[in-house]
Amino acid sequence: MSSIVKKIELYKDFKKIIQVFKEPPFSEQLTEKEMIEEYDSYLEKGVSYGYYYNDEILGFIGILNGIQQGHPIKLYNSEEVLYVNGIAVLKDYRKYGIASTLMNHAISEIDLYKIYAIYLRTNYIGSKLENIALNVGFKKIEENGQVITEDVTFERNNGKISTDKRMFMIKHLKK
Image (cartoon, rainbow, N blue to C red):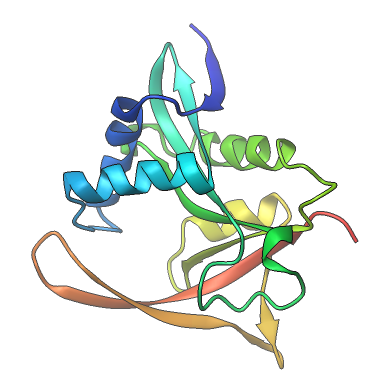
């Protein structure tokens, strides 16, 4: 019995882990087409890693190259930054350090000659990711002493449209 973090290379693994986003607190609707598009985006414009235990995927982190459209990253050029687009752990395996392990692994894989920072966006209130990110060296992005946020609108599993506030966090990799 052993655990390992490695690139997700099979769609079936990605599909299994991405189902986490259907559960609370996310409760997002993901069609098969959207899951395939998301998987393809990591293959084409980034990377996704899985946390595997006995060949079963228990956690995931997805990272995309560049500053995403509309995101307030001003210190770097887009080609010098990576974006944590998603991180998830199956419900029964949360609070065992899997998300932190995934974050640390992803950061260790970054080419420090080209990449100067990695950033993410998480819920402003009630974020499970905030403490994990803080513990691995991320800081909230502020402007004029205020945390930078944005409102995000999406459809929930029950068909209702929901809006929540997200904040941005960044980890500077070199000075």
